[in-house]
Length: 337
Length: 291
Image (cartoon, rainbow over all chains, first blue to last red; front, side, top):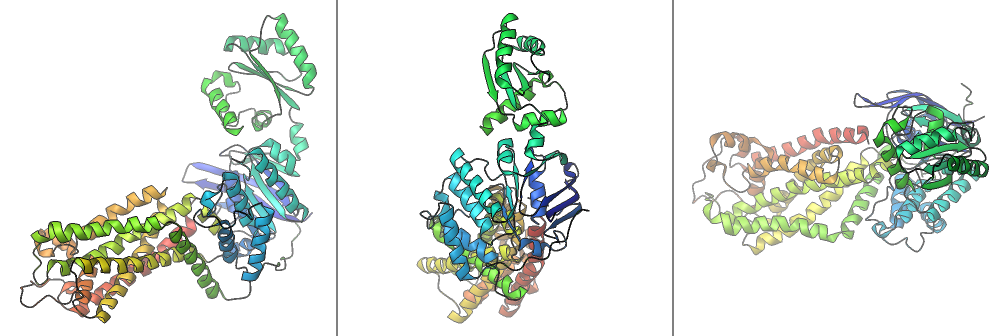
């Protein structure tokens, strides 16, 4: 295979204590979409910043299209596009002016830049807003302009750091289509995401990192196989009832249920059967769930399956022992939906 | 390692026209300057309100405090205005730190660092745009000075030399304050961090009062710090030497004697010194700062 991006044993510590990367290695094949998956604080952004020459690693090797990012940063910069975690657009400039600025700083010739800019604004549905200062743009428009800016110079390798965070579903779908189109044209795309769904839809290869370490890699299919296809979420009246429910529900599934405070989660492979079965068993035990939901496994579930701990980083196997852990997790889910 | 080496890709359709490193450094700097100037035109109220404060200072010192401040050798307004000019451009350099802190906050510095642009251009473009703003501010403050009775005490040539000197000083300070902008967690903090530096420089100086009125320990500081030296030089070039009919006790420092050439000389040295020392330090900060 030909490799577009290589990382070997990257280490990065901020200050003296915060170990952002603790020996990260992986390869990205040319012309593919590669997903870097992990919770907040896992080190995803640090990896992207090192690969885009924005940050220096403490040790390790990183190459983009054969160029060492530490020794030949300028060569790397000429080949890449970066859309960072924030929509990095100058809000006092118009959409067209933002593309002009990034294009000129990429040392593009003016006539080519003009054509390219018009084409991108068209493609990203920003043609009508091209001459308005971007402070009047919606969040989705800013994000699209940000991605457009990263494409001005026809990069061979594109880095997208959480490109759809904060976007509404329609804009998210637009960005997905755009990423797929680019990959089809031969651009190598490395994207970071917190959403399993997004990685599943786009990425051919995935790496999951947690606390600066690679904890799993493979295709989305192999990752999903590490857990059930769906998750059954049951809400109970109180913690005690939840523990009882967890006990009786051991009968319905190979994998034991996980009790988190007042909720019980069961990773299942055939949802409909388990739901009927679970309700029957609960009724026999005299337990009435207050809520019931079948859902896709979340990144949290992947993490639980891979590491035995939740994404927040608690090492206590049974999170019910730590009441606030559940609250934090709920808050995160709400924030994500 | 399972890697096969990739040949270096050929330049794509959008590849740059050829040009040397220095050529592109200048182009990058001009691009960044233009970007910052466009931004100024989009928020004219920012320029308007940043001009209000120096005007208030003129009115305050000219009409409220001025009558109580004896300035041997000068009418107070002639003494005051060069000091006001120095104070205004010195405080203007806060704008440099705020602008860079905002770029940092909004993720623009991250984007710039991933671009194949000169590492000097972000700071160079910001300081050059601020230089243009200072030119405008100087014109405005000169007009305000005329309205409150200030008159050029030398000739237009020397006055313009004074303006140039002030712009050089402000440009040097901007490069220094860029460091603060790149070190602060956000623009509000950048502003707060700048004040404690500027306050002792501008107020414990010869900008508003003659140094002789200060206690000895303060004089020792005020006499030798760059803002006083700039004020003396600006006063020499813009208001002229002290009038002979009033006693003007000579300053002890070589940098602030009545001699025009020596005050101006030291002002230029200070400005160039600040620029040559702090510009590389700030650029290093730009390159190294963790995001």
